[in-house]
Image 1 (cartoon, rainbow, N blue to C red):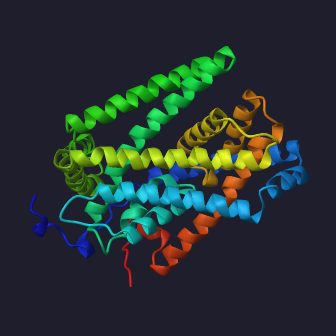
Image 2: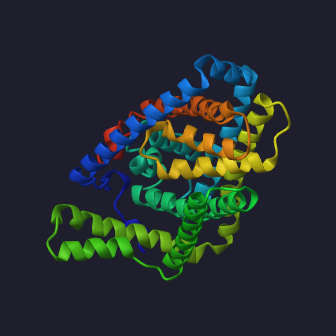
Image 3: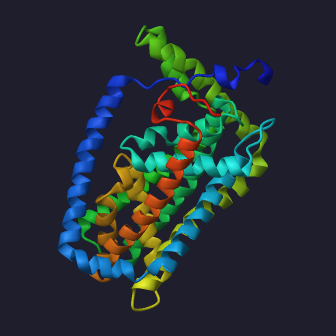
Length: 359
């Protein structure tokens, strides 16, 4: 591919999303968020507001600072994996990668449609370092590795939950279906890369040829083809980077387990088992993936933590306390991400297709 003839950064627009699809997703996000807020209020009421305040207070300012430090290491892990996902002749400096990850996470957390723009936000944040299509393809490449490791992580968590604890038959069936679905995802991701399936661009090409939404499909089919080619080229050229990228993705999840273990060690009466922290993190990760439309996964994160702690025979308020502390950490880093967005002169509209400029 002739990189010199590719559009320059300023000439590469971000294709706009289809309006009516956005409208439907907004409606779904609003409904889910309302349900989440209701769940959150219910859990706070059922446990008791002041009791939760007391549990959260056990961690203290110093303990909360440790949570912020652990998450900063998680940001470093994702940024390192992203850096390795950028192919020659391009380079992504560590500082820009870190800022991009924080901005992407902020967008993912703070708005109902964050799942649609977090990847784009990362690419836009580093437009001065990487052409937009290169930034997007590198983000997608890193996300494929992340999805692969996350699927393995969730499978291991599901197997541990089913094999180690007595659950109702309905839950066992649901978890077995989840395991089968995750295995199917892994197989699909491997085949997608090995066979180099241009699924997205071919779909939009067929739609374009049939005259369906040509104003949208005409632009997307070309961007998607170039986007897919960058990804497949990376997998052919840099097989030695696979293990290091996977290592950083594993580190990201391991630090999540460490975060929960630390919280349990501070608010509990005894030293927690690794299994407890592992199951709480795996369920939290699953909920984050499934309910990403809900800002800060409010309500549903508490519900998942409550389910695990009840299964493990832990105190009723432990799961809610963990979820609240992690939300405090999320709020802090989201604030940092929004500051970085403001500093770069970016707006949310830039991530949905508006022109993005930096000073």
